[in-house]
Image (cartoon, rainbow, N blue to C red):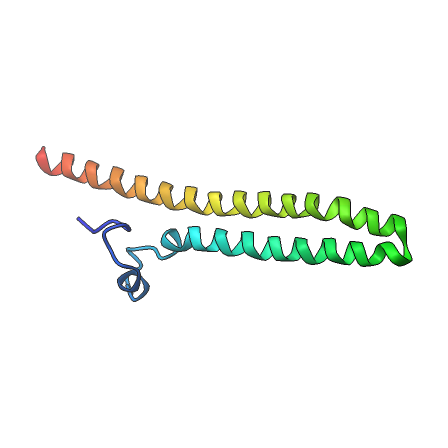
Length: 110
């Protein structure tokens, strides 16, 4: 029986040539945090640009100030759904592996 992702270290998984341990499932939280930080910084810059745009174009500036957070929220939802889909794929792989192992054990018992 092979080790699970949680019992194998990051660097051991990184250099696993057989790809029996996945690195992505260990990095997914870090990727989400980085995406939140990047989206937050982009939102601050977008809103700041909206405030500067108020001087020359009032309605354009108001548009940027109002819609920048909404667009950021949409991007955050897209990132979250994408990362959840990746996790679901890895869980399907783990569950399939467990099913195959349990069926092999049942065949050996017979």
